[in-house]
Image 1 (cartoon, rainbow over the protein chains, first blue to last red):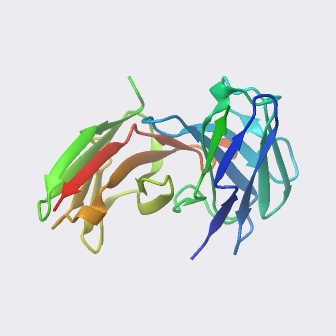
Image 2 (cartoon, rainbow over the protein chains, first blue to last red):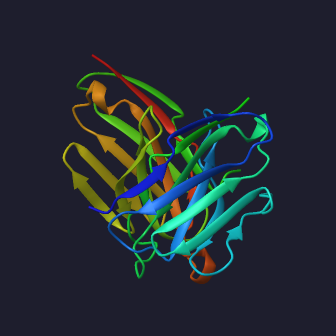
Length: 118
Length: 113
Protein backbone atom coordinates (compact mmCIF):
# COMPACT_ATOMS: atom_id res chain seq x y z
CA UNK A 1 0.00 0.00 0.00
CA UNK A 2 0.93 3.65 -0.31
CA UNK A 3 3.50 4.75 2.22
CA UNK A 4 4.48 8.20 3.40
CA UNK A 5 7.80 8.48 5.19
CA UNK A 6 8.57 11.34 7.56
CA UNK A 7 12.01 12.19 8.92
CA UNK A 8 13.21 12.76 11.55
CA UNK A 9 10.79 11.19 13.98
CA UNK A 10 12.15 13.11 16.97
CA UNK A 11 14.17 16.30 17.27
CA UNK A 12 15.50 18.11 20.31
CA UNK A 13 17.35 21.35 19.68
CA UNK A 14 18.24 24.68 21.19
CA UNK A 15 16.15 27.78 20.86
CA UNK A 16 17.06 29.83 17.80
CA UNK A 17 18.03 26.96 15.54
CA UNK A 18 16.18 25.97 12.39
CA UNK A 19 14.80 22.49 11.94
CA UNK A 20 13.94 20.79 8.66
CA UNK A 21 11.37 18.00 8.48
CA UNK A 22 11.02 15.83 5.39
CA UNK A 23 7.91 14.13 4.04
CA UNK A 24 8.37 11.60 1.27
CA UNK A 25 5.89 9.57 -0.70
CA UNK A 26 7.70 6.28 -1.21
CA UNK A 27 5.69 4.56 -3.90
CA UNK A 28 3.58 7.26 -5.50
CA UNK A 29 3.81 10.79 -6.77
CA UNK A 30 2.05 13.53 -4.85
CA UNK A 31 1.39 16.93 -6.37
CA UNK A 32 -0.10 18.03 -3.07
CA UNK A 33 0.97 17.27 0.48
CA UNK A 34 -0.43 18.59 3.73
CA UNK A 35 1.34 19.66 6.90
CA UNK A 36 -0.41 19.44 10.27
CA UNK A 37 0.46 20.39 13.80
CA UNK A 38 -0.79 18.75 16.96
CA UNK A 39 -0.39 20.06 20.48
CA UNK A 40 -0.65 17.63 23.41
CA UNK A 41 -4.15 16.32 23.96
CA UNK A 42 -5.47 18.31 21.03
CA UNK A 43 -6.47 17.33 17.53
CA UNK A 44 -4.62 17.98 14.33
CA UNK A 45 -4.66 21.43 12.82
CA UNK A 46 -3.84 21.98 9.17
CA UNK A 47 -0.93 24.37 8.80
CA UNK A 48 -0.44 24.50 5.07
CA UNK A 49 -0.95 22.81 1.74
CA UNK A 50 2.29 22.07 -0.07
CA UNK A 51 2.07 22.30 -3.85
CA UNK A 52 4.73 20.84 -6.13
CA UNK A 53 6.33 23.53 -8.24
CA UNK A 54 4.45 26.43 -6.67
CA UNK A 55 4.07 28.30 -3.41
CA UNK A 56 2.48 26.63 -0.44
CA UNK A 57 -0.94 27.74 0.73
CA UNK A 58 -0.95 28.62 4.42
CA UNK A 59 -3.91 28.48 6.78
CA UNK A 60 -4.99 31.58 8.62
CA UNK A 61 -2.72 32.38 11.54
CA UNK A 62 0.25 30.34 10.29
CA UNK A 63 3.34 32.45 9.63
CA UNK A 64 4.76 31.56 6.24
CA UNK A 65 8.15 33.08 7.09
CA UNK A 66 8.30 30.98 10.23
CA UNK A 67 7.28 27.71 8.62
CA UNK A 68 8.99 27.46 5.26
CA UNK A 69 7.63 24.81 2.92
CA UNK A 70 9.39 23.53 -0.16
CA UNK A 71 7.88 20.97 -2.52
CA UNK A 72 10.59 20.67 -5.13
CA UNK A 73 9.71 17.21 -6.43
CA UNK A 74 6.65 15.01 -6.77
CA UNK A 75 7.82 12.81 -3.90
CA UNK A 76 9.26 15.23 -1.37
CA UNK A 77 7.99 18.15 0.67
CA UNK A 78 9.98 19.79 3.44
CA UNK A 79 8.87 21.94 6.35
CA UNK A 80 11.52 24.14 7.96
CA UNK A 81 10.78 25.68 11.33
CA UNK A 82 13.00 28.75 11.31
CA UNK A 83 14.53 30.23 14.46
CA UNK A 84 12.57 27.79 16.56
CA UNK A 85 11.44 28.71 20.06
CA UNK A 86 9.95 26.63 22.87
CA UNK A 87 6.41 27.55 21.79
CA UNK A 88 7.10 25.80 18.48
CA UNK A 89 7.49 22.51 20.32
CA UNK A 90 4.79 20.26 18.95
CA UNK A 91 4.04 17.15 16.92
CA UNK A 92 4.23 17.81 13.19
CA UNK A 93 2.73 15.35 10.72
CA UNK A 94 2.31 15.27 6.97
CA UNK A 95 -0.10 13.52 4.65
CA UNK A 96 -0.35 12.92 0.94
CA UNK A 97 -2.44 11.26 -1.73
CA UNK A 98 -1.34 10.04 -5.14
CA UNK A 99 -1.63 12.65 -7.84
CA UNK A 100 -4.98 12.42 -9.56
CA UNK A 101 -6.91 11.17 -6.56
CA UNK A 102 -9.48 13.35 -4.87
CA UNK A 103 -10.56 13.86 -1.30
CA UNK A 104 -12.76 10.79 -1.62
CA UNK A 105 -9.68 8.63 -1.14
CA UNK A 106 -8.02 7.76 2.16
CA UNK A 107 -5.19 10.02 3.20
CA UNK A 108 -1.76 8.53 3.77
CA UNK A 109 -0.03 9.95 6.82
CA UNK A 110 3.59 10.05 7.85
CA UNK A 111 4.50 8.84 11.33
CA UNK A 112 5.06 12.40 12.52
CA UNK A 113 7.95 14.37 13.98
CA UNK A 114 8.05 15.27 17.64
CA UNK A 115 9.88 18.59 17.97
CA UNK A 116 11.16 19.79 21.31
CA UNK A 117 12.84 23.18 21.56
CA UNK A 118 14.86 23.80 24.71
CA UNK B 1 -18.93 25.47 17.89
CA UNK B 2 -16.46 23.24 16.05
CA UNK B 3 -17.33 22.14 12.54
CA UNK B 4 -16.63 18.53 13.53
CA UNK B 5 -17.72 17.31 16.95
CA UNK B 6 -16.91 13.92 18.42
CA UNK B 7 -18.33 12.16 21.43
CA UNK B 8 -17.36 10.94 23.85
CA UNK B 9 -13.98 12.58 24.38
CA UNK B 10 -12.84 9.75 26.63
CA UNK B 11 -14.07 6.18 26.63
CA UNK B 12 -13.06 3.32 28.87
CA UNK B 13 -14.24 -0.21 28.19
CA UNK B 14 -13.65 -3.77 29.29
CA UNK B 15 -12.29 -6.26 26.82
CA UNK B 16 -15.08 -7.73 24.73
CA UNK B 17 -17.44 -4.78 24.98
CA UNK B 18 -19.13 -3.18 21.97
CA UNK B 19 -17.93 0.38 21.46
CA UNK B 20 -19.48 3.30 19.62
CA UNK B 21 -17.86 6.64 18.85
CA UNK B 22 -19.96 9.38 17.32
CA UNK B 23 -19.13 12.22 14.96
CA UNK B 24 -21.34 15.12 13.91
CA UNK B 25 -20.42 17.77 11.39
CA UNK B 26 -21.96 21.03 10.29
CA UNK B 27 -20.47 21.62 6.85
CA UNK B 28 -20.95 20.17 3.40
CA UNK B 29 -18.57 17.30 2.88
CA UNK B 30 -17.27 15.18 0.05
CA UNK B 31 -16.17 12.38 2.36
CA UNK B 32 -15.75 11.51 6.01
CA UNK B 33 -12.65 9.76 7.35
CA UNK B 34 -12.09 7.75 10.50
CA UNK B 35 -8.48 7.72 11.63
CA UNK B 36 -6.65 5.87 14.39
CA UNK B 37 -3.72 7.50 16.16
CA UNK B 38 -1.45 5.29 18.20
CA UNK B 39 0.35 6.43 21.37
CA UNK B 40 3.53 7.06 19.38
CA UNK B 41 1.66 9.51 17.17
CA UNK B 42 1.40 7.60 13.90
CA UNK B 43 -1.95 7.85 12.13
CA UNK B 44 -3.68 5.11 10.20
CA UNK B 45 -6.67 5.67 7.97
CA UNK B 46 -9.44 3.24 8.97
CA UNK B 47 -12.32 4.24 6.74
CA UNK B 48 -13.34 6.77 4.15
CA UNK B 49 -17.10 7.14 3.73
CA UNK B 50 -19.36 9.17 1.54
CA UNK B 51 -22.52 7.15 2.15
CA UNK B 52 -23.87 4.04 3.83
CA UNK B 53 -21.77 1.64 5.80
CA UNK B 54 -18.37 -0.02 5.65
CA UNK B 55 -16.95 -2.95 7.59
CA UNK B 56 -13.39 -4.08 8.10
CA UNK B 57 -12.81 -6.89 10.53
CA UNK B 58 -14.24 -5.84 13.90
CA UNK B 59 -14.67 -2.24 12.81
CA UNK B 60 -17.84 -0.83 11.30
CA UNK B 61 -18.40 2.74 10.15
CA UNK B 62 -21.70 4.28 9.18
CA UNK B 63 -22.71 7.66 7.89
CA UNK B 64 -26.04 9.46 7.57
CA UNK B 65 -25.60 12.31 5.13
CA UNK B 66 -29.00 13.87 5.83
CA UNK B 67 -28.35 14.00 9.57
CA UNK B 68 -24.65 14.87 9.11
CA UNK B 69 -23.64 12.14 11.50
CA UNK B 70 -21.28 9.19 11.48
CA UNK B 71 -20.52 6.42 13.94
CA UNK B 72 -17.55 4.13 14.38
CA UNK B 73 -18.29 0.81 16.05
CA UNK B 74 -15.81 -1.69 17.43
CA UNK B 75 -17.14 -5.17 18.17
CA UNK B 76 -15.47 -7.49 20.70
CA UNK B 77 -13.05 -4.76 21.78
CA UNK B 78 -9.50 -5.68 22.71
CA UNK B 79 -6.75 -3.85 24.63
CA UNK B 80 -4.85 -3.38 21.36
CA UNK B 81 -7.75 -1.20 20.17
CA UNK B 82 -6.67 1.40 22.74
CA UNK B 83 -5.84 4.52 20.76
CA UNK B 84 -7.20 7.91 19.80
CA UNK B 85 -9.90 7.75 17.15
CA UNK B 86 -10.32 10.84 15.01
CA UNK B 87 -13.14 11.82 12.72
CA UNK B 88 -12.19 14.09 9.82
CA UNK B 89 -14.18 15.51 6.94
CA UNK B 90 -13.10 16.42 3.46
CA UNK B 91 -14.79 19.64 2.47
CA UNK B 92 -17.04 19.72 -0.55
CA UNK B 93 -15.02 21.99 -2.82
CA UNK B 94 -12.40 21.73 -5.47
CA UNK B 95 -9.36 23.80 -6.24
CA UNK B 96 -7.14 24.59 -3.32
CA UNK B 97 -9.34 22.83 -0.80
CA UNK B 98 -8.71 19.55 -2.56
CA UNK B 99 -7.85 16.91 0.01
CA UNK B 100 -7.94 19.29 2.98
CA UNK B 101 -9.38 17.71 6.10
CA UNK B 102 -11.09 19.24 9.10
CA UNK B 103 -10.61 17.18 12.23
CA UNK B 104 -12.68 16.40 15.27
CA UNK B 105 -11.01 16.63 18.66
CA UNK B 106 -10.57 12.88 18.90
CA UNK B 107 -11.84 10.19 21.25
CA UNK B 108 -9.37 8.55 23.62
CA UNK B 109 -10.29 4.88 23.90
CA UNK B 110 -8.86 2.67 26.60
CA UNK B 111 -9.78 -1.01 26.65
CA UNK B 112 -8.87 -2.90 29.80
CA UNK B 113 -8.21 -6.64 29.84
